Image (spheres, rainbow, N blue to C red):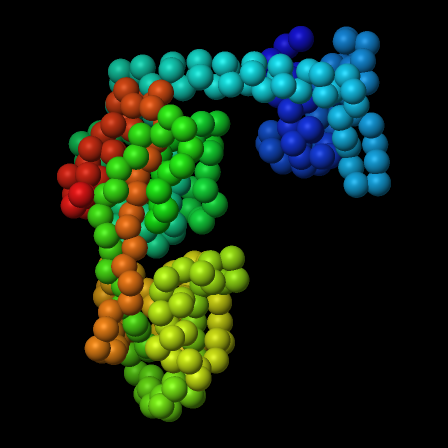
Length: 284
């Protein structure tokens, strides 16, 4: 069996359909169907059966699933080792980060990185999804929670301060419990974040009017006068359309963690970014 055919097999098993597998692999739906047909024809086995909820593994499929995952781990290890031993500070560097952090914190780091190493091409994958560094979904990640995956080299870079903001020209006259104030917060999936709980405790009588997982979107809605928002100071302080509110107590800050797979630690372009990030924004 060819490794590429087993990659298709694993994608179908994990996605549960040809369409989901096509998205995971970045190929067309018919391509996945053809590759599965070839794999089953070559092996003389049927690996999936169709059900009302999608494709599920047959007994034959179950028997090779674990072996295919072992082969995948070996192939990924080889890829990481080859990439990690590249001695040229050039090429694509995939970086996972929240959009605001990439713009307002990493922006100067990227500028200096490209000044020193113009052949490196940073590719920022912005968002809150925790990418799998073992599968090389990203080469290096910056996030607000520590890494728990095995074989990850990580460092707490710094702790960022947060502040409460309102539109620069928007009058704010809250009631005793915050009545009349609109709250702009993280969405439901991030409702447990410390700054969300802090804001709700500060204004228990206020009403949530807008939620978003993007701090940049929150800042924009705040500037348009929808309500107040807790934002990283490095973001909010740079926007003239916002004003920092003095509440007598600051919202809780957040630690920033940087991590990458240990097999990638010798990749020159990754090391260049990691060292520069530690030099320019690291405090711990």
